[in-house]
Length: 126
Figure 1: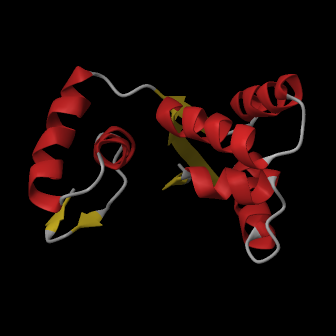
Figure 2: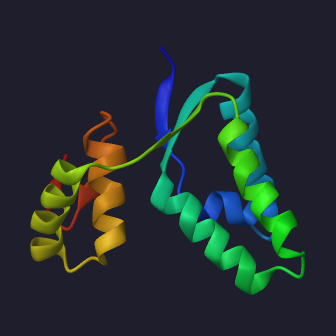
Figure 3: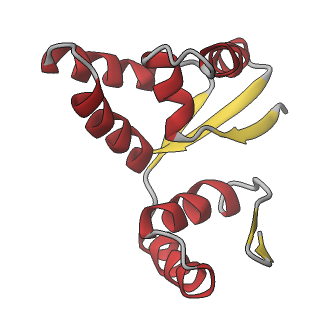
């Protein structure tokens, strides 16, 4: 079984927007996921964030942006999960301790803790 890695929104955005300093590393990670060298995991919240940011930063037409974001669902070896209510309840507990933004807490619980990816947050860990 390949190693699981959480793919945050910035990785996709660096790749899609061809960010000068981060493009190569982001592309490399996404290629490793495609080849099955690692298993990528992200959430629907991340995909929604990508859509919102591309709409603000990109000069592409909206239908092109939506099409590009939908293509993320076709990346081989990338699982897009939808956090459930238990993840949100657990995220609230993390937020109380860490002062993180709500979506970050949900992503950390939904993606990392629930899927066996080790993380460390302000003295607490999964």
